[in-house]
Picture 1 (cartoon, rainbow, N blue to C red):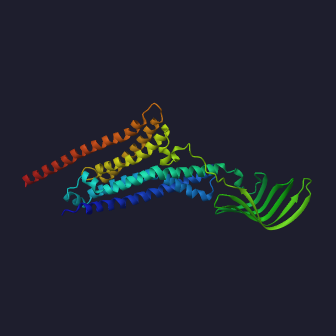
Picture 2: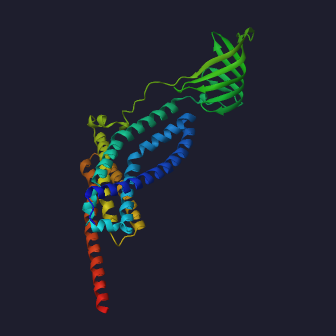
Length: 377
């Protein structure tokens, strides 16, 4: 029974999408867990607030989206086509005379859709994530060390002196027990004491000290207590986050596509070619995925996945290897960026030729074997 091209196309694409979602979600969770651990360690170095760790992890996941997406698409096609070839569903393909070229035509809608997503991820999403990560890191590095209060230790807060007997961390705040705060004020000193208080980080990353039910002592230079007052609520600003956006002009990886197009420098052209290369590589890898998986009787499913993984890793590293060579002024960057794609196009040609010979020999041997069996009977 011959099926229409539309039915076969929808069938193949639905299978690929199903496998793609499974691979993408599993890899995203693995990378998310790994990045969470790494960012938690980085928070000590950079001084991230607790509320910033999760956004930084998500931004790093978005930064790596093009590579993750490309691999998920490539692996999904390899797995889908190989499973079809290894199961009874191959009858559908054989009965409709579906070869590699026809398979590529059947999934062409999916291919062009994924190429568009890959390109958008490379030229917009990933640079935006890198820019936000840089801003968060610069903001955290510019914060003074004194904003991280230490329990049972005297801490200098700019011109003030702070002490808390006990500090209990909580979400976006810290509960303080038995607080002493000394502040200079017009030639005198204010000594503020309170049995309880809070260190609060607001949504703008500004930090405030709030003290409750305490006393204020004004002390002159001769250590004479001039005035004592009581309060139910006292608030003091500890740190104000700089609202000025940091300049990322020197970080090409953080520039959007429009900024790169207006950048005539060699480094700007290298970054632009690198982003475009990722989408070009996806197209060539999809062709390889079809070649190493569909209708190949000699290759097992696991072997196809392993071969595909090796191709992806080698291709990915080749692009960055020639990108590093392009950094040298004496080299032609356009030729260097074209070399990895030319190499893998040659690999595609070799694979299709080898595959054709393998399949031809397989069916010739199979036919000869059947003929011998008939003669014997």
